Length: 145
Image (cartoon, rainbow, N blue to C red; front, side):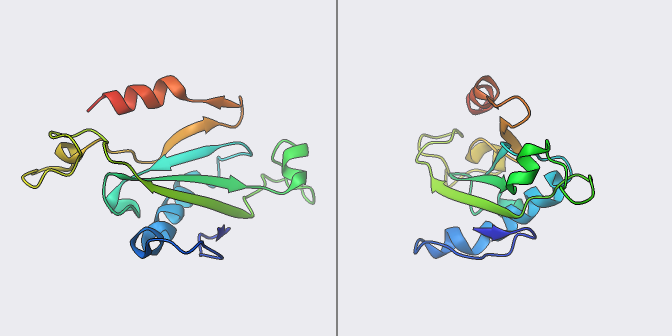
């Protein structure tokens, strides 16, 4: 759980390498999406240069708004401006296979990040405006490598 600026508030006991960099992944999504995200949006990333650890570690990041933002279509209840998320929830999991030039990802002889697997950077997994899981788009992305 992260605050509105991406600072860690609480976490489950887990693998430290996953937790240590997750705040940077959240901060990257905040920098890119805070002004446009709305309740229901969900983003996914595994970009090592934007807070990821390595390609197989996929992070799902969700903004959390207060009830007023939901009821007023994401407008601040006090002044009518666009509401910003109060919190962000991040979940990271290691995936055995994420594409690349060898099964299992992360080949020891890879020379570019594309050879290691599918790079997912700031991808909108759920479109909150339409309540739509972007299934076709994520499948197309995953099949691209």
